[in-house]
Length: 60
Image 1 (cartoon, rainbow, N blue to C red):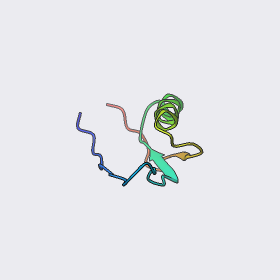
Image 2 (image 1 turned 90 degrees about the horizontal axis):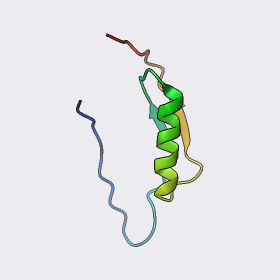
Image 3 (image 1 turned 120 degrees about the vertical axis):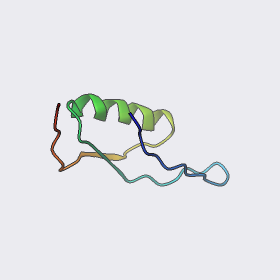
C-alpha cells in the first residue's frame, strides 16, 4: 500500500503547529486514532484534534 505524506521541516527547536488530523477511511477508527495520538505525543504534538473522515470505508 502506498501512503502519501508531506515532509515539514521546522527551523530550530520549534514544532510545526498541527491543529487537526483527519483519519480515514478505515475499518477500525479507534485503533487508528489511538496509534496516531501516541505517535503525535511521542513527537511533542499534544492536544491535536483527531477526527474521522466523512468518506465511508469500503471493504473488499
